[in-house]
Image 1: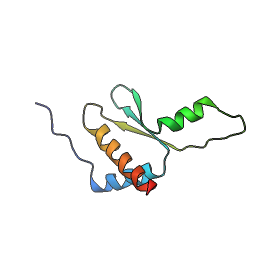
Image 2: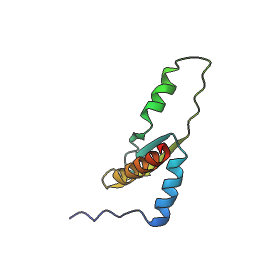
Image 3: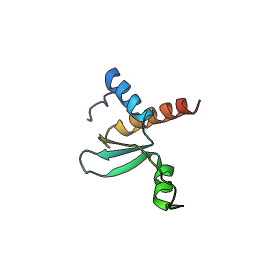
Length: 90
């Protein structure tokens, strides 16, 4: 039987909220396989990669978080991203 997923501690949760609120792109990387996924900010990455105009510089901050893809880590980080970005738009 698998172990129950652990919730983020309140301190880690606040640190994650602060880090996410200051970034444009959030990447999660599996600790086991090193497989990486864009969790938030795909449109920012696409804008950077297209290089629409050579005189336009896009500066973006990225956060790369090691997670366990076999747990609910990705969902927890995703929920923080949605919450923080929603508050930023208000």
